[in-house]
Amino acid sequence: MRDPSIRRSVALFRAFLREQSDPEHCYGLLARDAAGQVERYIPVEGRTVVDIGGGSGHFTEEFRRRGAHCYLFEPDATELHAGGRRPRGAVLADGYLLPLADGVADVCFASNVLEHVADPQTFLSEMVRVTRPDGLIYVSFTNWLSPWGGHETAPWHYLGADRASARYRRRTGRAPKHTLGVNLFAVHIGPTLRHVRARDDVQLVAARSRYWPFLAGAVTRVPGLREFATWNLLLILRRCPS
Ligand SMILES: C[S@@+](CC[C@H](N)C(=O)[O-])C[C@H]1O[C@@H](n2cnc3c(N)ncnc32)[C@H](O)[C@@H]1O
Image (cartoon, rainbow, N blue to C red; front, side, top):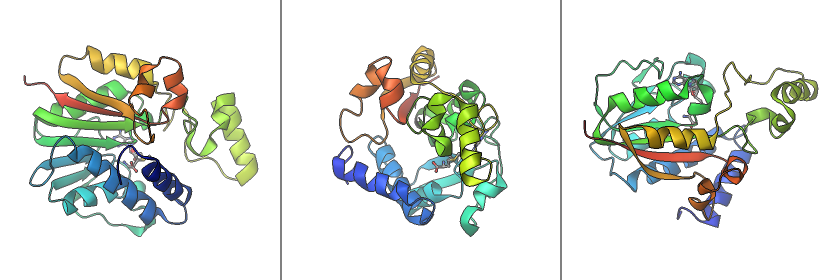
C-alpha cells in the first residue's frame, strides 16, 4: 500500500481497532508497513537491524523475512511472550544499556517505545551509540497531546492523567496498563524535534506523521497544531560519521 495514502491509513486504523481480538493481523500489518518505511532509505537484506523494545517480535520477524539479520531487545518478559509468542533469538535487555558494541547496527529501530521511557534523550543516545556511521535510526512515538496520547485511557487524558485513569477503572473494573510517570511519559513533538536538531551526532532525515494519509510531513512543521494533529511522530535519523 502506498504511503501516505487514504487506503493505507484506513487499513492501519481498521487493524488497530481489532488489535485486542486479532493482534497477529494488527501487528503483522504494522510491521510490514514500518519495514517498508525503513526500506525507503536503506535496503535491509543482509543488513544488521536491532529492534529495541520490540515486544513480542512482529517487527523483528518482518525484518528477517526481508533478509535482515535482526535482533530483538526487550526488557519485559511479559511483553516478549504476549499472546503465547516465543520470538527466536530475543534478548531480555533495557534500551538504556544495550549489550552491544558501538556502531554494530546498520539500522536501529524503535517503534512506539520513546513515550514509555522516563529519559527519552538517554534512550536516543544509546540508539545512536549502537548505530554505525551513516546508519539509519527509525524512532516513532505517540506524543502526549495526540488523541491517542493517553493510550487505553484516551481521549480522557486531555482532562488530566489521574481523571482519565479513574474513569478507566470505573468503566472496566481494572487498572489501566499505563500510568503516567511510571510506564508512560508525556513526550512532546516540539522539544523532541529541537533536541534531535541540536545533536551533532545525528542528521534529521525526515520528521513526519507515521500514519497520516496526506500532509504527513507538513503537519509536524506547525507549532501547536502538531502536538494535537500529528498523532504519532516518525523520525528518520542518520548517524553522522564520527
Ligand atoms: C507499546 S510497546 C511497543 C512494542 C512494539 N515496538 C510495537 O511497536 O508494537 C512499548 C514497548 O517498549 C518496551 N520498553 C519500555 N521501556 C523500555 C526500555 N527502557 N528499553 C527498551 N524497551 C522498553 C516495553 O516493554 C514494550 O514492549
